[in-house]
Amino acid sequence: MTNKVSIIGAGNVGSIVGYSLAMQGLAHEIILVDRDTDRAKGKALDMSHAASAVRSHSIVRAAESYEDVRGSKVIIITAGFPRKPGMTREDLLLKNAEIMKDVVDNLKSVAPDAVIIVVSNPLDAMTYAALKIGGFPRNQVLGMAGILDSARMAYFIYEKLGYGAGQIRASVIGGHGDFMVPLPKYSTVAGVPLSDLLSQKEIEEVVERTKHAGAEIVGYLKTGSAYFAPGKSTAIMVEAILKDSKQIFPCAVLLDGEYGVKNVVNGVPVMLGSNGAEKVIEVTLDPCERELFRRSTDAVKEMIDVLEKDFFKEK
Figure (spheres, rainbow, N blue to C red):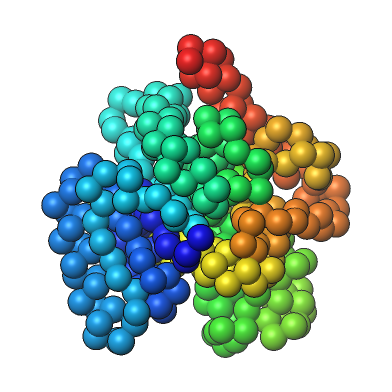
């Protein structure tokens, strides 16, 4: 198997993933799959020109069909339906589960061994759906959220401090959304604990802003959501898998007893390698953090229960 990477959905996030990989020369072949083939062709050509400008060996192509995905080492799924006025969260969940089923059914026949990174929202529930639809082992399908949320927290720490950019390591676990669990005690600046640098009030302000960072960006953009940071965060996961780096990143995975949770997808530290989520790392949580994590898993379980009742039982 080569280091071929395929991206399902050539919108803003998918495009940034492809561009990041091409600029670094991480994959020799990058395939863009999109319902709008002309859009994918235009973006692929543009990215290939950019790769040539930096003398990267990456070639970006638009897929004519899912057959072009065959042999991919990593597949990123960004395809999804945006929430429209009048739609409930449940409507959106079921609509995107249908899209996920169509995508995964196609992928199973052409790239059954690929590591799949889910970026589509609602992320934790869509990761669960991809796992169940495909019947994949849990290491093979993981969701991107923790790297993004941790990066946002790191930036907000920098804003408070005014120094330390590039040396800040922030840690966020839990679901991607209102129930994420930022972990200040595992966050440092050049190895210095955050509690030595910021007051408790300042730390709480960082935590709250991290939780609502996505909505803050939507408020400014008005017609869309973030894509630079989500795209780059996904590319970081792809790099770890292609290079078999065994680095630890927070990712959404199906828990099987870790943290006292079974059969629910949630964000936790994971060792990434060529086989995907190769090891789930259990960190010590205090009672307050444990309760916040429980709320996070409960929120995801509610969505999973809807899928089991209204989506999988009908199939």
